[in-house]
Length: 174
Ligand code: SF4
Ligand code: SF4
Image (cartoon, rainbow, N blue to C red):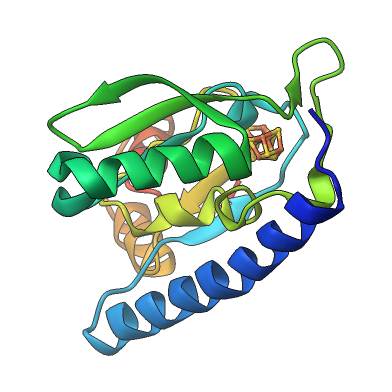
């Protein structure tokens, strides 16, 4: 269901907070020496990432009854995310989105979509092996891609094997 003016406003305010939080968190990670993958490729608007959005949470939200209920109520009533599953080991919730129209594959409230939708798939670039959705037009490129490619080029390898290794090590920009 399309967002009305009140929900639009609430989501815009929340966006300022979550986007600021995201920037600060990533600044801290960088200051600690963490280097994310670079984002390569491009979005081809398949909307696969809208089919079942997932959110990984901390222990308090996933296991704490009060915070869990608050978190899920916020996502249900503000963002329009309906819980359909959860994965305990990774503390991840899976939702369907009431703003997603599977027929047109479009978002009915794109201008007020939450920050996680705006940020996707950058969040994956901090994972050790970014799990992009099958068919996603984006790809992760290692911050050391040039060096890895140089080392592989110096090895005597069959061309297909070399390309396979570059792909698996996220050293290929193609
Ligand atoms: S899955 Fe990837 S290519 Fe498809 S819409 Fe989402 S970001 Fe774009
Ligand atoms: S709010 Fe819009 S962009 Fe975000 S998951 Fe739903 S349909 Fe996709």
